[in-house]
Image 1 (cartoon, helix red, strand yellow):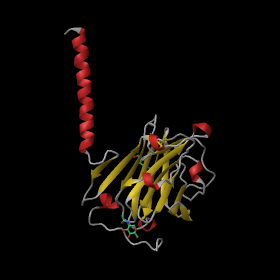
Image 2 (cartoon, rainbow, N blue to C red):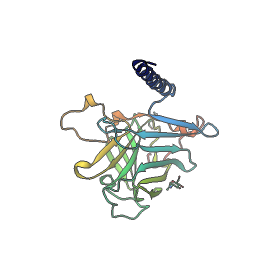
Image 3 (cartoon, protein in one colour):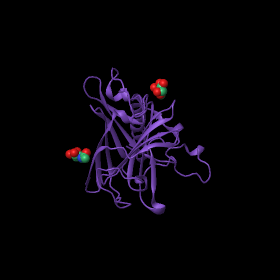
Length: 236
Ligand SMILES: *[C@@H]1O[C@H](CO)[C@@H](O)[C@H](O)[C@H]1NC(C)=O
Ligand SMILES: *[C@@H]1O[C@H](CO)[C@@H](O)[C@H](O)[C@H]1NC(C)=O
């Protein structure tokens, strides 16, 4: 084969594999997550956070969040690099810690986009957590109890929380998730559904409560079509 032919051949095969990748990711109904069928129509759904709050690509292995069906509530599993920055918050593992958002955290927000009622769940690699109930950006309740454990292993951490059904406002239809780590100018704010570049105005900073950027999410995708969200006394 003449050298230029070989180059052309390699270029074509690269193009083809890139093309296939695009095709196969379009075959999946949603490009932002992958779901795996379990039994009885239930599913576990995994999301990867690959962008910063302002739509830049994250330059490290992405934080993953997996939601799984549970009896008492939604199971949330986090897998992430452990940045160890900032250091652990001065609070007991397994307990709520106010101001956890100033530390290393992974967070998921679950929203009813009609009422703007939402639940915020923050998880820390050191075992602390913070659960908030909010409405339209106003905090209604903070520091709800949560069954949560985290393990740190060789520069990675993983954690599992069970979010009780009664914590969710009725009619969840949107979600967003975030990860924060680092200190000072090295502080990174990452978002599953970031703000598009063209919508960012000069001087704007990260704000995780911009509910219009949240995207479709259904607990029925995880729990099965026949499942109904139990009524919640907390949100009455
Ligand atoms: C972390 O992951 C390991 C390996 O998969 C697992 O055995 C462990 O239970 C997980 N820890 C938590 C707190 O989820
Ligand atoms: C949001 O909550 C309201 C009031 O509880 C409810 O009427 C509405 O159906 C909910 N939204 C969705 C998408 O279910």
